[in-house]
Length: 264
Image (cartoon, rainbow, N blue to C red; front, top):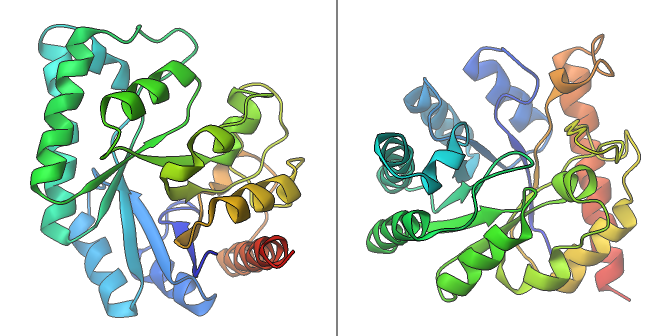
């Protein structure tokens, strides 16, 4: 079962790097992730290392991700950003990169152009010993494409919040839990497209279900929160200390819940 508690860097909003990392450490977060295009990546990595906080993965850029399926310069530029992200993982000894396959309600169809680009991405990742974890968004077909095309290499990042608000009624873990290598855990109202990224337990998601699915998977990596204070007004009056303490408490409660399912 999950052995560490983690949180995304920048969850509270703009704070000095050292202050963010100090708040993570103070509240028992042992792991984190950040975007591969963070403008101060060197400083983030240095602060995490000094605090003894592991960086489990980077999140690949996802703005303009639909370009990956389009012929021409825009698609090649998007691929280059993903390839550079893999190279950054290797450089900083970060073992995995979380990648979206598309964005929005009407993304391009899976096609040969995109196929060839993802082949190039997976080839570089394999060469540099970086794991690519594909994350559920809205299109089941894109995930199926990745896991069918790269059955031995592609891994799964389960975003329980996306499942709740982007694809209500569709359950990804029974399909792909055998490939689970990363988690994005957050809460929302379940209203379609309301991706609130709240702290678990602060909205309407069923975390008994979340805990049960993680337990069934046998996953032993980090329970990684992906929370964003500024996505709602709920936390407007919360200080950084309040926010991080509450997030850590919610994360530990969820780990206990997962353990209780595993003990049954």
